[in-house]
Each structure stands twice: as C-alpha cells, then as structure tokens.
Length: 375
Image 1: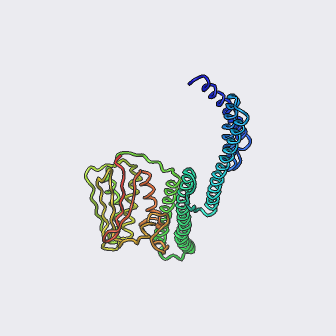
Image 2: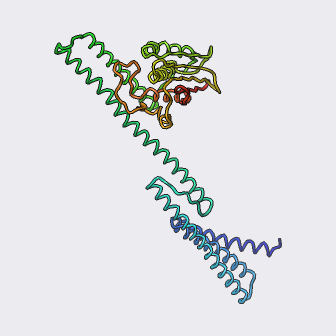
Image 3: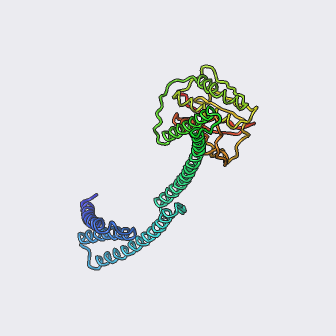
C-alpha cells in the first residue's frame, strides 16, 4: 500500500468514524426509547452519513474538479436516500411483526392462550415459540390448580360430613347416658370410644397430609428390611381382614433392603393393605409382593375390587377422593378415617422418598405398585 492509499484510508476512517460516533451517540441518547422503525431509520441515516462524509473527505483530499465533486455528492445523496428508504421499509415490517406479536401477547395475558404464528426474523419467531410453550405450561398449571381447588372443596365437604355424623351420634348417646335412658351404658361407652378413635385417626391423617403438602415431612432414612415391614402390616391388618372375610397373603424376597424411613414406609404399606381390604369383597384375597426391580425395590398390593374406570384411575390418589358419591362412613369401621386421605398420603410419602406409585387393573381387581430407589 503506497502513501496515497494510506492517506485515503486514514481520511476515510476519520471522517466516517467521527460521523458514525456522533450519529450513534445522538441516536442512543435521543431515540433509544422510540419504535424499532425509527431506530432502524436513524441507524441507516447514520451509516449513509458516515459513507458520504468519507467520500467527501477523500474527494477534497484528491483535489477533484468541481464537476466531479458535484457528481460524487449527487451519487452519494441518491444512494443514501435509497438506502434509508430501504431501511425504513425493513423497520416498518419489523414494527408490524412486533405489533402483531404484542397483540397476541396481550390476548395471551387476558385469556391465557397464545396462538403461535411465527413471523418475521428468527428472534421474533423464537419469542413467539417461547410464548406458545409458556401458554401450554400456564394451561397445565391452571388445570392443576382447578383440580386442587376441587379436591380442597371435596375434602372440606367430606371431612365435615365424616365429623358431623359421629359427633351427632356421640351427642345423642351422651344425652341418653345423662338422662339415664341408656339400657346398656357399657355398649354406649364402647361406641363413643370407637367414634373418638376414628376421629383421632382422621385428624392424624389430616396432620400428616398437611405436613406432606407443606414440604415439612422429615424423613429419617436408614436401611430397612422390606419383609419385616410387610409382615408387621399384615399382622396388624389380619383381624380386620378376618372380620370382613378377606384372605391376606404376601411374599417378599429374602434379605430385600430399602433405604427409607421405617415409620413412614410402614404407613405406606398399612394404608395400601387397609385400602385393599376395604374394597375387596368377602372371600376375596389381598396379596402383597416385594421384590428387587429395575434400579430399586418394587412393592405391589393386589386386591379384588373389580377394577377401576379410566377416570377413576386418574383420580385415585387425589385428596378426599373416595371412589363413589357415598359419603357416609362405616359405623365402627376399622379401616381408618374414611375421608379419602389414605392413598393421597401414600403418594406424598413415596414421592418424598424419590419413588413413584401407580395403579393398574388386573383380574380380579387392582394392583398398586410402589417403586423406591435402591439407595
């Protein structure tokens, strides 16, 4: 590169750079909050002005004739006008696309649904796609919120009913005892004690469920022999099963261990077994199986309930779901609260152990499967 070329480069850089810096500073401080169309047009004007400044500076240094200098100026101005006009068209299109996306976002805020219509440059298309994904997440969140609200209303209704019935019976029995009208006071006392025990179990279930939902369930993890837990649960449930004519059976792999909280795992097994007995008819069978499976331990409880409908399988672990419209508890029942909390507690405890619980139909009833990680 010779001396003249170096001089032209330096003059062009100085003229174009100075013009661009001044123009961009003016755009930043005066127009940065304006529309995209205005910003693109302003940047185009700055770019054209920098080119014209460089051409004019070099033309003066080259000592061109007045005619040639005029031609250069005219060509630069025409090219600049065309360039700015093109930039304004692009800015207008981007502004229109942005306005369309803004309208969709506004409707998204009002209805929660976003119509994914990707237009314009890649950035706007990615923004549109992200809003569409957010819309789907919001819809799922609203569905879950609606289900939780429905479960909450059902829980309040069912628990209120389950408390009102025994309380009314206890009031009648205590009034009969006070008035000396009870022909068998000992039987009344036993019945009152039974109702009190049932309400205590219900309150315990509610407290356990509140701890699970609040994330306050504290686990004391240690190696636990699954066979011991299943044996204890079956032994505790055996009198209830005999009273209802249900046969209990189980088989657990020898020496099968799981890292879990012993008391909470025992509650899971007991709740599943008592739920199975509750829904198994007389002469039916409840069978518990524990084995190593996959990367952890699997525990299954099979009953003779006759199976669940598809919509029932989706709700079986919901809070306060009881599987029927009947809300009257079984008088003197040994099953527990009867408020539809047992399986919800099972799911909460299993998930706190980083496990999963599911249900599937199998002849002659249902099979609940709990999967827990190995360690």
